[in-house]
Length: 362
Image 1 (cartoon, rainbow, N blue to C red):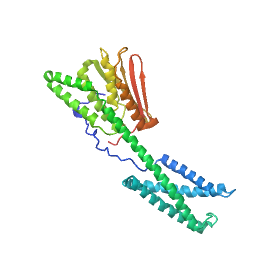
Image 2: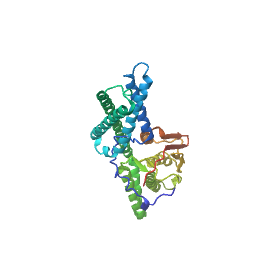
Image 3: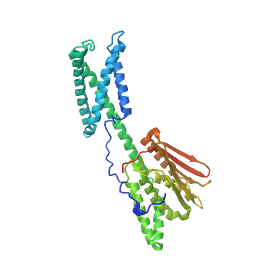
Image 4: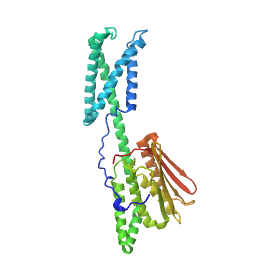
């Protein structure tokens, strides 16, 4: 992968232009997993209600009737919430609770009344062993409790998702704070040495350093496209190339990866920084950092490897802090779907990232 020229770098998307993404109070009710959970919970509710009211020898009959009734309520409620979800989300947590509660309660009462009238007309009174008033009242009481508990669960789940996002943003801020002073000092010294010998290159180096600092200190998004991540890494590589010269070589083999794929922001550049700072810089003759990538089914894999000095290591443990930060953010973003592996030998060090493929619409 060739380095981008500075004119090709577009870091305008790195500031948080779309950072105000509120956490959804309601889940995606159209997702198969959500529908399955709703059906399972509805059936458990039907079993619980049947156990409290059945007569000996009629359990299966009563359960079939209760299941039919409760499952229809659950499916209708799920479909209704999926329709009003965009509108409900604009009302905030408390407003969404009230709106959902009222809408679902009205739906339950309407279905109860329709069920009573249809049963009375076509099925006789034996299907519902209750009076009209008690049947409506029992439906109202049971649905009120279940809806309230469900809305409370959704609120807790929403706050949990929100806390995960806030924690991820805090980890990004911590990673941004890891820009090492020695890199800034070395960069400024390199620029100072170029001012007289090569003013044009010195000017480009200042612009690259400004772009790199802006990208690191101004980025607030949890995700960035792979293209944006590689552009930031390319800027960092150019800055280090000015200082290390031919001692630093970076080979990019990422042509097979989709550049629109989304990845937790500030991932590639810190890994490249670790490879240079803890590997290449300690070798008298330098070495090559190899960055490769491939598509593995529905996942993407990125691997970065570099040579290391056998008997020389940095005294500070900044690499472990940065790697742990990235590992935790990948766990927050993807859970068990992501893998973060580190492999170290006497003369090499490699980091492998595997994460789900997700492309933006840019």
